[in-house]
Image 1 (cartoon, rainbow, N blue to C red):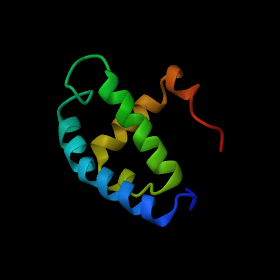
Image 2: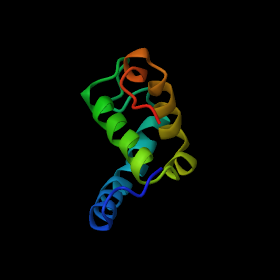
Image 3: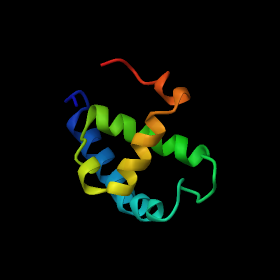
Image 4: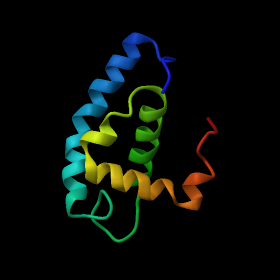
Length: 89
């Protein structure tokens, strides 16, 4: 986690993504992927990338607050196609 984002953008991004976290978590309570199918879609990819950035630059607390979303995030992070794109810390 870093403090690299300017304060204005940090607050704006946190506010926007924090609106979605409970919605995604509820959706993943009964579904494997965000659009309820058996395969991941562009919606999952976009959310995964956004949450990866959010965790890396801003805040990882959501991992504690949203267990279904956390499990989905961690499961997708284990895919080889995703692992190969994650920046080294």
